[in-house]
Length: 78
Image 1 (cartoon, rainbow, N blue to C red):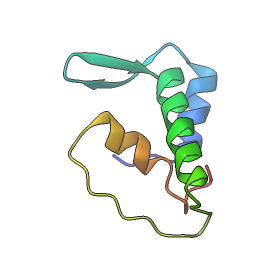
Image 2: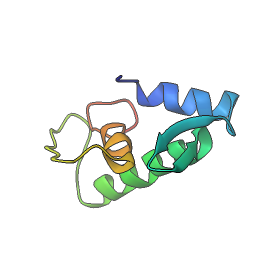
Image 3: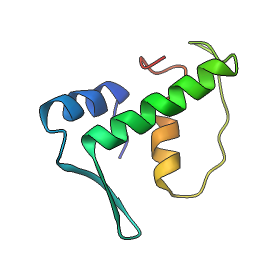
Image 4: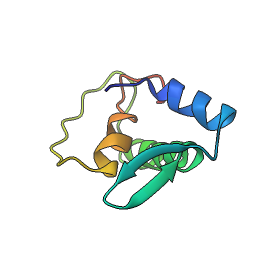
């Protein structure tokens, strides 16, 4: 399932404490997931990645892969 980063933030606003992601006995709320997306976005921006640029990511199925996808420069988050 692919979702827009904006929908992550909308869900965080509308239902911050609801479960958003479950992975290996850990549960992330929408608020936590949105905060992780923002942190990854800020990290990419700090390294010089700008909107419209392409970034390749090689990742295993993980929460980090989900939050990194949400920060892609082509996405409205950046």
